[in-house]
Image (cartoon, rainbow, N blue to C red; front, side, top):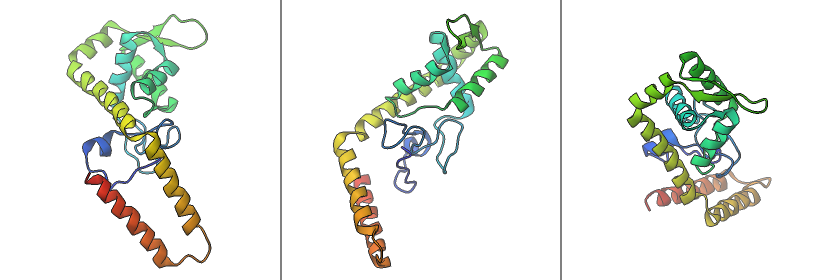
Length: 196
């Protein structure tokens, strides 16, 4: 996540527009290749635009009443941990859904507010069914991608590369040519992987 965003190595739409890797990916929570829905951090792109994210939350709430934290966990589970929306994205979106009349506060135990879909919200989902299905297919794609890329051998190889770079290039007096040579080797490796 955060962890790896190389704009010139990933040309597919899925890489450029969809993927954010959270705390279960190659880095820490909320610092993925791609930014969280509606957010741009460090040049990363969003997973969903605001309208798409509203549909995702509305569908999850229509499936069963949920509060904000449960929505975050549901999305994290659907993506295998590769995408974790921030509370700063979820709660304003819930407020907007309330204002639109698509959800309402539901009775819940404890201090957390749970939300349920209204008849209007359910009708809105039915009218946008194909789009909703495509959005949830995208969430599944994120989980599939993490499963393919976030495995032990890859983590070991990336950790080894990082350690070598720190050891070899972190010393004082390293020549500029050495730095350029290292960059060229990494770029060449990335290009070879892309062609696999």
